[in-house]
Image (cartoon, rainbow over all chains, first blue to last red; front, side):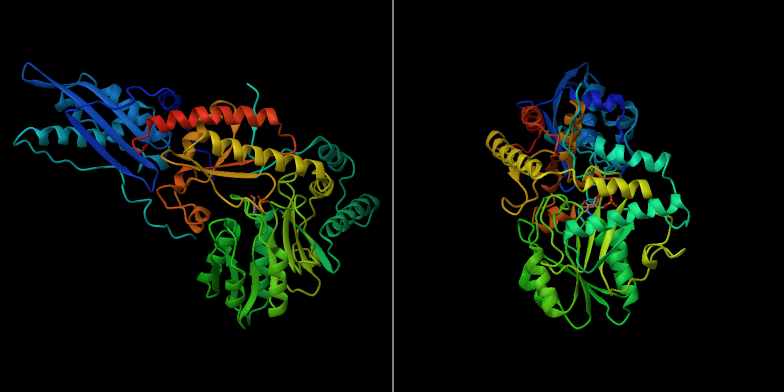
Length: 152
Length: 381
Ligand SMILES: Cc1ncc(COP(=O)(O)O)c(C=O)c1O
């Protein structure tokens, strides 16, 4: 059982997360997670329109999970606040991990899901606007802790 | 920042009197116990004294002490050694909450065609003696049930298990790494045929342990060589470590045990009272004197551990996410904790040096951290 080593940035975000909490009457909400792995994340968006563009005016998160889950939640809110939805939609889980100077390999699968949750929130926002449907591929793993792994 | 260490179940420091006793055996009395000269014979004499001391501590009247590299090796030797030496019987019985070194040995043997019965445990971690009795059959060679569980502190009733094994004429092994010198163990009274103990949980050095076995039991060695340790475990004896092991037997006093029990009970009461989302895992009675294990709803154990670590407090989690394997926690599973809650577990274990002041600091920080994480969680009610 090796120690899991987190970067300084992860620890900073983990101890002092940014934009934590809920937004009342949010324009879009994303909820994803894999409780068996111990990670559940909600993201709330407030969107404004400016020169035909939709911009993330405010973003907040709630997360149950390990340091990786909490720090990626905090980091993604920093990354996309003020960005257009188009720009935000391009962010990947990998980008988030990179901004945090990396995550321990074992945490890449199931705890690194912030970008998926954000896309889920954007999708929810688009859904609420008539005739706007989008699709995306989730990249985090939502099942890997469900089945008991065979022990050697 | 002063460190507060509350992870004595993982390992303990070597205390000064043990360290002092060991030093000479590195620097001066470095002889090989197999050598016929004076340095060798002196070392041998001292090692034999430790064997006797271990036997006395366990009230072992008719047993041999085999020194090994620790609990893991002793458990491997007990199980593999025994089944390989007794090929006609191919069934063993263990519990679902054994340490990994027993569980994985059992899984390994299953792949080689042996049959393993994994006894269930109840909510508090106790095996069902009736189920044990029913599981023993003609082909059963061994029952291996740990004394104190390393995660939730459950103390099995060795005496009753020993009685059943004796009646049914099967061998009884117990892994007593967590309980040795903390709880009463009497090989005669409890009818124990093989027992695993080690030094690094009782303020002795790491990398030394013993398997104590009843005379007449056949084992196939895991390590072949010069025929040390009655032929059961070859390799030049680790004399300084054995000397340290011997000294460590005296470290934990009756007063220490009483003090740890009082602190443990105080902490259980305080934490349950002050953290409404907490739940105690493991028993309230027949619980190892220094073990505490809690589940916190809506949050993850690893996050609690890390935040405590940043505040200078060392504990442990039972969480799958903290190991590098993401395997589910088999003990949590066995006592019926659902998977989506099993990540919220922490283990705290006390030592002879632990003070009330330290536990108060710990509790105060724990309350703060649990609140912070609970506030952050989307699942909080
Ligand atoms: C119950 C139990 N068995 C076996 C072991 C393994 O002992 P060792 O670390 O000496 O190999 C431990 C501790 O790690 C333990 O707690």
